[in-house]
Amino acid sequence: MRFSIYKVLLISVLFSFIGCKKNEKSEVQNDANTPNSIQYAKSLAIHKHNGYTVVTVSNPWPDAVKDFIYILKEKDGIVPDSLKKYPEISVPLKSIVVTSTTNIPFLEMLGVEKSLVGFPHTDYISSEKTRALIDAGSVKNVGQNEKLNIEQLIELSPELIVTFGIDNNNPSIENLQKSGLKVLIQADWMEQSPLGKAEWLKLYGALFGKEKEADALFENIVKEYNNALALVADKKPTSTVLYGSMYQDQWFVARGSSWVAQFMKDAKADYLWKNLEGTGSLGLSFENILDKAKTANFWIATGSFKSLSELGKANPHYGQFDAFANKNIYTFEGKLGATGGTVFYELSPARPDLVLKDYIKIFHPELLSDYVFTFATKLN
Image (cartoon, rainbow, N blue to C red):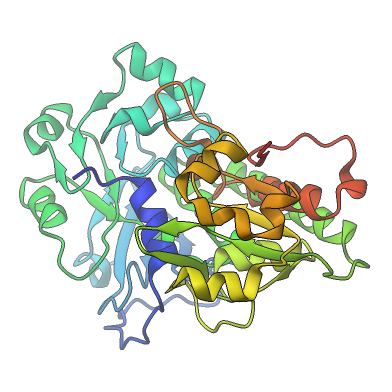
């Protein structure tokens, strides 16, 4: 089975809830002179000290039982004895392996994409810039996330592998570490705030000695996101919205505190499941969906459908929705890279400002009359 960012995003949507957990908190103490540079992300903390930086990753998967602490040591930096029990990573990095397409935009935004030496299942990468590196042989295909090619990784000898886990059982990660490879567990997929996901850019700024560049890039994303919010500040959420599509025998709707629901709330749309508590999603029957959303004004369909006809063929009952009859259906997953990767899955976490503008263009087109969709496609 191929495990990729597609499945990571699916998992982040399909988890019915993120349970409360009792963390084994770290003993790392950060004084008032080293404030956390992270504002929006809930699972990341970065405290920069003289000569080293302490990175804390918390809640990397549902019901995680501990935090992960990493020490980023600069050249000639002196790490206190009390921190030497944590994994130490020499920075700035010169080579890296990442395992989620969501990491690719961060590397490119910082201009360090040439440091990427390996990626699992490279066909999933959509970016033309990184695809050129793959085609030139600079980025090797290192297997699949659940079964990385350890022998090849040892040969590539990256200075760091950034990966993720989905639960407390991660034999693949343990095998990498046993082989002497340095591993950092990332938790960006667990973030529910659009700006929280994007702020993981700062981790890569710390890893590559480009903190100032990362801060400036992120500040601009925040500015653009807030500018988009200002466009709809006086608007009422009058457009009712259905989200999702059938997956096997269930229709998964995003819960009210999910990443998806937040975008629709910020775009001033009336998402029909906005009051469904929790993050992730809930699987419902088609009959339940039809009863609630038959008269919805808009339908944001999941899946890489190219036309209404293709969508209709996927399930003949879709035609019962008013949004289908009125041709008010959009998908964010229709734009693909040269080898079939979905552009939205790769770029959207890093650029929530563009996602929000797409949603505003759908629900309030008069506000962005000259704006061209980045991700969304209307099905005709």
